[in-house]
Length: 225
Image (cartoon, rainbow, N blue to C red; front, side):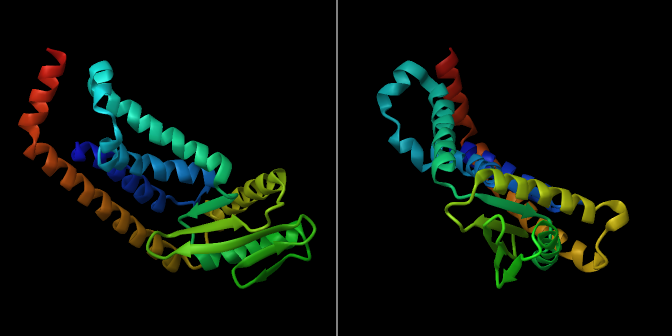
């Protein structure tokens, strides 16, 4: 079952590799990014260590299909956590952090002339919008997290929409960044990083599957016949 546990994981890595090669940055809200991540690791819980939590008596009712229900259970649990506990976030893939900060500063002045950027905290006094900017060098993504607990959801959604439009305009074919060499270098590194992770997970999954192919075949034959 460990081979099945790795299938969602290497699909997740390949998705991240694909996001890194897009001509324009990809903007995901916190819910979308969290569910994408949980979809990649849910298999590890459903088919890996988490399978130890499944009561053996359930097999008499569901058989092999219990794995699919267990996978969906972890996915639903991740959704509930995201809805109630995940802070407001925006995740940008495929855009260098310093380039994103310059776009934020320009956009902030349009939204609020008094907007400021102090360190990694971006603040718009009029709308009381305040977010922290963090990044991951190897993964090639930047995270904007609302640090104001009273932040209005409608304002945050409008900010996300404005950011998407600004990035789409800046990275259109006629408005590509002047630092094209520097811009394309990081996404390529991110692509090879995530692609190599995906290939590694896929090869390990395939090796485990081949090694246990006879037992897997007997399992399906016993269940269906």
